[in-house]
Length: 319
Image (tube, rainbow, N blue to C red; front, side, top):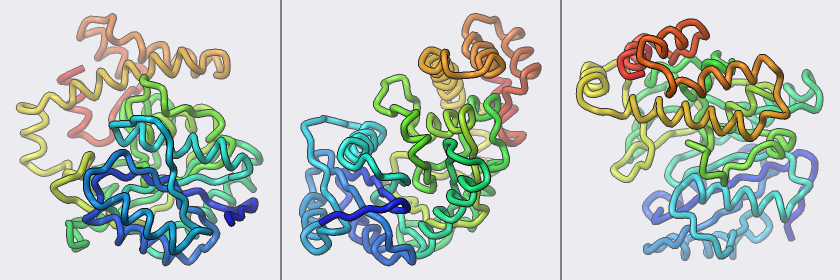
């Protein structure tokens, strides 16, 4: 029987054709120093042995692991996570803390303990307000050998950036490191098609309505392999800079996504935000209406800037 209390953590895992690394990831969760968690796993129609692995763990640990089954067709990690989160909210209304887990990473044994302590300290300090806490990651290869000690450094991210104008442009919160409380959970709906990326959306909402905390310690081994949907590329390498500025049009696509996401945030939360937040969202959401010189002027005036000089140069080139 599943038992929860005021500090139980719901871990939402989205699985799809993950047989290669899934078992190792679940075992890393099982070995956490914090034992007060429930793992909810949803398979999105895998064609490999993923369902069998999930059933095996559910049978062995029925009080700790739940298989989420529904009639939804997700076809993306964002929607898969959305289905898991929806299941937990509807079936466990007293659950207070939420995490996301990818199927192919490896959690360090104190990940939940460190993050939960930080969340609860923030709640004690700020009261009953939406709280999001995220951590650094260790970038590793398929065999868990280290490629980079810090994802923040690897991607030239600035985790201290928490303001709305900066997070609208570039996310620095990685979904598999975050934990958020019920107050924030009740504000978000990541099933909306207008959500660009679930972790990015949650980070922006947390910035608008609550508090974002960061742990400058890697709590997860972030595995890079041939099957990654979203991976980690070393930002300041010569190859990265050349590719981003002269070959790949991803910079421009991300800018378009961010502007349209801002339009959606303004539409959804318009009656809940402050006048200043409404102005910030509106200014960024209007970028598509301007010519290039006007867009650059707006970006500089309101500090709609990415994190790091390479990213800012690319942003101003393609805005």
